Amino acid sequence: MRTILEAEDLVKVYRIGKVDVPALRGVSLEVQEGEFVAIMGPSGCGKSTMLHLLGGLLTPTSGRIVIDGDDITAASDAKRTAVRRKKIGFVFQRFNLFPTLTAEGNLRLAERIHGNGGGNPQQRREVLRLLGLEDKLHHKPLELSGGEQQRVALARAVVTRPAIVLADEPTGNLDSENSALVLNMFQELNYRFNQTIVMITHNPEAAAMCKRIVQMRDGNIVEQAPTVRL
Image (cartoon, rainbow, N blue to C red):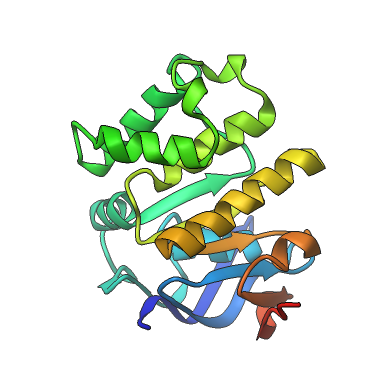
C-alpha cells in the first residue's frame, strides 16, 4: 500500500479586513491508496478548508501537499489545475451539473476536461450502470430527481478513474433513501475499483461506512482511528 495523498503541517489563515482568522493550525494527514476516509467535526472546524487544500483549490499559508507523487505546495495555478484535472474527482453537496447537458453529456464534458477527448464509452456506461443510471443517459438535470442528480455528479467524478475522489457532504441535500444509495455507491466504488475516497460528513452512519474516521476540532486533527466492522 502506498501513500497517495499527503498533507504535512498545513496552516491556512484567512485575512478578513484587518484580522487574521486561522482555519487550519498545522494539520498533517496521510491517505493510502484504496482508503475510504471520513473527515468529521463541528461546523467551522476547518473540514472544508482542509478538503479544498487537498484538492488544490486553495493554497496553504504554510505546509506541504503531495497528490499522487506531485508536490503542489508551491506550484503555479496552471500546474495545480493540471494535477487537479488528471488526478482528482470532486463531489459537492451542490450537484453543479450543467443544466443544458444530458447525464451522458456531463460525463463526456468531464472526460474532455480531463484531456480524454473521445472518452471511453464502455467505461462511461459501466459507471452509469453501477450507479443505476443506465436508463437516464439522455435526461437533463431538471428531468432527474435530487438523488439521481447526485449520482450523475458522482459518476462524473469517477468516470475518468481519478487517483482520488474528494467529497464534501455529498448527501447533505438528500433524503435518507437517496443518501443510502449514494453511500452504497461510494462503498462499491471503493471495494470494486479500489477507488481512494476522502469524504466530509456530519452523518455518523455515513462515516461508519468508511475505513477510517478523522475527527477535527478548532483547525486541528484531534483523533483518527479505523472504523469497527461488526
